[in-house]
Image (tube, rainbow, N blue to C red; front, side):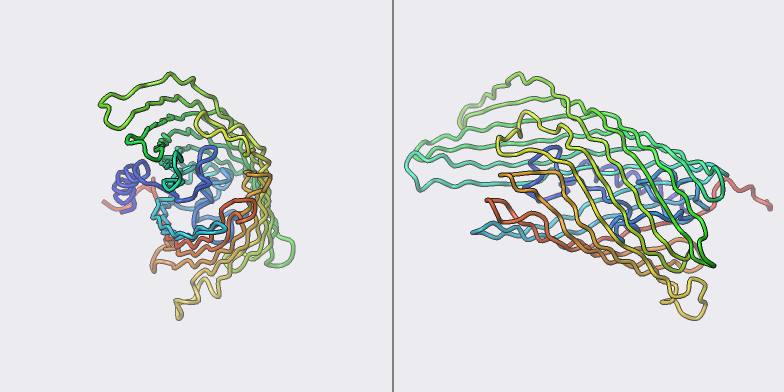
Length: 409
């Protein structure tokens, strides 16, 4: 059954991932857009705390986790998000429904493998500057869409029952399209310009996880991963057109090389397996080189990224036969992020809280997960934009045994 689900879902999601506009944030103008992937929903509901060697949930961020899978696991998730975008004088609202991830994990004895498709970043904004009431004033409208996806394949290996290592390779690809329209008051025709950047490049990730018992049923969990810096090639084209002119004019644009910075993530937690967990995750990333020819702005620079998160889960009674609600996994987490963007000498930060619940599917190890995330990104200070967001997410984790020889014909 799970094989049929995987095949049909992969075909659907592959199309959706290319077609969707995954954000409505004006901050997606910069770099390669908003970084979208924050982990599978089970861990995202704990603010990204993913330190336990889980046998039925897939942890894509640390490839060492693949070696702990007990069954073939298929994970897919999506989000409906709303946001209120504020400046010092105006407020607007936006909504988006997005695909978040699709991944398959396969246990192979001491080894474990995983592969999947993840939207890495998204661009989606429309910014207008209306000066039509000013003689000779220039009005403009900027619009962007697209983003970068990644496919990955990884292997994990269980060195000892307590210690895993792993690595994966990621191929990043996508297209970002930006357009601008400029109109001078009292001039009939507007000028249109479109920029298209086709982005591609590979990156690598390594990780390790260790757990040990520290007191009776209480365990210590640790996780460490490093995503190496990598280059992204951007092949660029630019066309311009004046309203009323049937011809468009293409201008040569030099290809650019973007650099994704390396990212170091460390986490630790304590808890009782299938009962409770509380942990923390810290992540640090360099400033990289993400300016392209169309979004280089003098008052904008990039700084080191940092994330601080705490989170955990609680299961009242994992083996209860009499109470379904006792088998539900309840999750929560808090996060603080410096997203690595500085505008007008003001750092853009993201503060948020997440809540979630995992509902087991009776008669299997599969589960359905729901999550809510709310928070604030940015500020209205220094002419910036503040985003108050609320995201509703759903994820499915289907588990099944593959490669088991049948005992009966």
